[in-house]
Image (cartoon, rainbow, N blue to C red; front, side, top):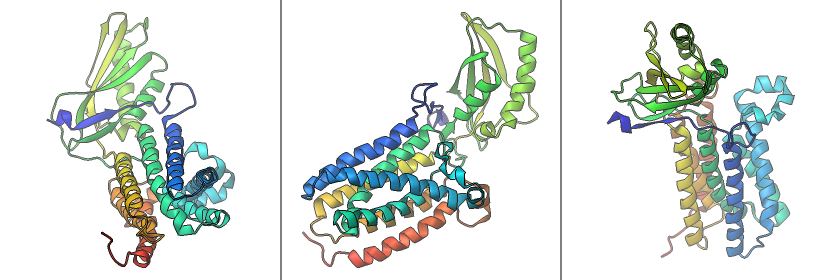
Length: 358
């Protein structure tokens, strides 16, 4: 039964191996692309000029990227980035914070609404609908990158994120290994993890010196599995025990199989992607069927209350982003969500419909 309860995730973050485009970038851009199409449809139904969405999208893109980057730098590592301000521009090194994006989007929509001649709450009620969709796309991109990891489940269910294991072993074998794959292995799960097989395919024509290779696996490979943090987070290789493996030839290629324990984790990125998608459908339906009865700002209040409440819950399943979060009762993502919820509650009270229409 355990065999069916977990998956091994070893997706390549690059769409085409060796070329720059990555799944994260494609999904990030797709969120804005689909969002702009939906906003054009919304503007048309609301008797607004759909061409105005082009300007709105520009505000959204810049607000999201600038806010997310500044949020990461100032919320999670301010000392480093304020000491090295040029590093704030190194967005390709990673580091975006959704709370920073949310704050910047609100500020950006205040500026946009004034220039467009619309009220802020009219604009933000519609923007948050597509923000949910973009959030679902972006968190799926995080999943493709095997980042924003959840805690170990300790139940035998979940996702074994194997990409960093793959990359480190490929590097350490220095071109001798052509491909690494990961497979489930029959056996019972326990609190240490689930049984998996790491299969290494040597390059065609690569010769094997059996004595050298056996020594390499028992000393070097064993130390890789236990020494690299990028492996130890996902593989639970037992200390003091000889590495369980075998080397064999099949056709023109040599293969090796390592029998070890994988650590299943909560797919916290996909939890967030799922509730963002559900919130998108909910808010879009609320707008489509009830907008004529609702005060401007009501949909925004629902977004702020529900999204950030779910974010607080989701954070209980995630690894901390920075080490110092372990020393505070709630992590930074949870603390930043609290004022968002309070703002949502204030707006909800002020915009709650006075009576329910039939």
